[in-house]
Image 1 (tube, helix red, strand yellow):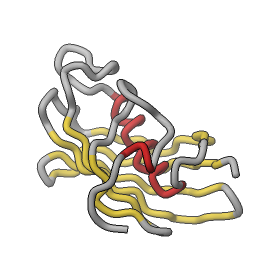
Image 2 (image 1 turned 90 degrees about the vertical axis):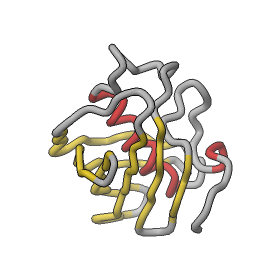
Image 3 (image 1 turned 90 degrees about the horizontal axis):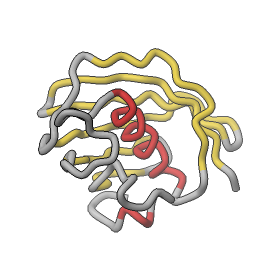
Image 4 (image 1 turned 180 degrees about the vertical axis):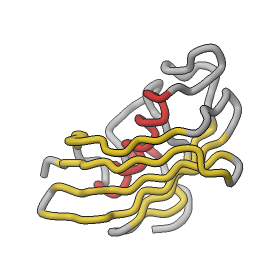
Length: 129
């Protein structure tokens, strides 16, 4: 699927705890989203989206592949952040399947700010059927 649809079609989270605005692409192997950080974001601290916000954005990007099923983060590996975005800036986040067995997916996630890679992680996500 490419193009814009309602975020509620993809993830179970509801405002104000939604950390993606647009799903640009989603298929069996890839999810790509965008998120413009609002001042009212519940995790923003001193005009900056901290580590917890970047992690939630990564997890919600992964979740778009599951089609609104409930999912859980089973493991976070190798989280690296080179800079933190500010309110008003737009993140582009890409999650690719590294491995998938039954309802458990290992996802490599990269987050970009204005084309520059600012965060990477590997998430193990389990979904409930």
